[in-house]
Amino acid sequence: MTVWFDESRLDDERVLGAADVRLRALAESGARVRRDAHESAPAAAAALAREHADGFRPRAVLAAGPDSRLLRAVLEPWCPVPFVAWPNPGLPGWAGSLDLVVILAPEGSDEGSASAVAEAVRRGCQVVVACPPRSLVADHAQGRHVTVLPTLTGDQLATAVVMLEFLEHVSLGPRADAESVATALDEVARDSSPFQDLVSNPAKTTAIALADGAPLVWGGSVLAARAARRVAESLRRATGRSALAGDAEHLLPVIEGAAVRDVFSDPFADEGDSELRPVLVVLDDGASDTLGREQRGRLLAAAERRGVRVETLSTTAPTEVARYASLLLQGTYVAEYLGIGLTAG
Image 1 (cartoon, rainbow, N blue to C red):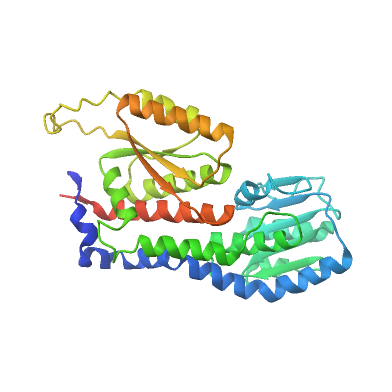
Image 2: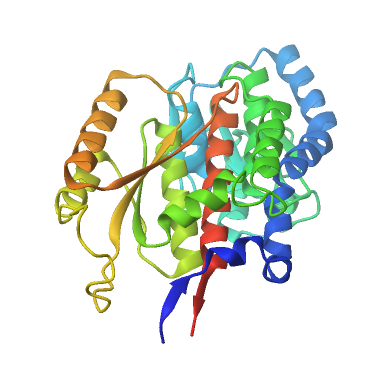
């Protein structure tokens, strides 16, 4: 069976209608952030009032559960006290009453997260949990030093934004601002809407650029690199093809191993050669640290030498979290359109 990319499918109302559920879920990303932020606001305000009255300053912040790595990517450079991400079951042996344990449980049904909450309560830790109010995790989040930030959407990013806003207000994290995140997501959804045609839709044009390539996704900052891994996952899931994300030293050998493109060659001379050439996808969140600039320069120079195409997704959103959210949603739209365009026969 031959698989090819038919770009006309990206503007075909019938085809897009079949993907409406998935595309609508992407379009509603900003609305989910706003809904969870609104739902959790009263509980967050009450918890902040208690924190200010008690004057509690944790010895360390421990992010437990499977979603702890996202919090680490945001908080580690900013948190004024030691920060530890603990995705493993339970809690480390040293965690106790002097420490703050934060847990993201978007669905609220994860037994590992529920166990971590119960263990933190038993040890007398300060605990903040973002989860649905009627859920397995919420049932274990009972105690004097426990705060539940209620969420409703089951969305991982929206749940994380709720927690990050709370940590910002207790001076343990950078500016999160749910509204700026939601606005950034709305802008991506507007620009990448299925109702925008190929000429004016950056997600569709990027999908076309990746149609005959094997994506290599790179982000220069910690958060952009995390977004790159998530985008690569979405590309693999949508297409069944290889898509890699990694640091420059991991991607450079792939680029340098690509055959130099001959601009005079006939692209149809060897129709049996189905090998996909690498395409470098740069996620640009505006970070300007020296290491990131150096790595990006090396990647772009190698791509130019080997004739490897470069596509860039960029954002000018006002906060780190909003920029991460924007890049992630842009890449997810690209993956969705790439999957829609691929057809077999």
